[in-house]
Image 1: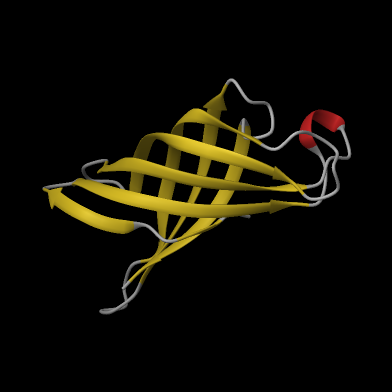
Image 2: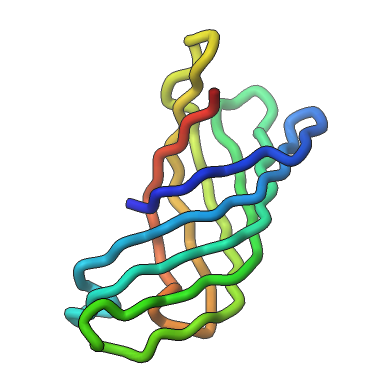
Length: 123
């Protein structure tokens, strides 16, 4: 599960723009292999709420860096785009909102490409 900190830039209506640094620590499993490493992402994202629904769509673009921890592959960086779908899990608290999403990360670098499931909080 990725650890991230979406930093809101601005929002208009149901559209919100964020700057999102994140870390994904992997202990194995890229394309059926037993690679170990970390993925660092620095993305600009936009999130659009679907009217009349708790769902939202998220798109993003930026850079990702895959860092090998066991020397299983060469550490390198690449451009990344992402597309995700999420839902508000806890929306009834006045100071806290919790969201869950599933996101596909597209890149020419196999170590940063693939699916993630994440949780985020908005204070």
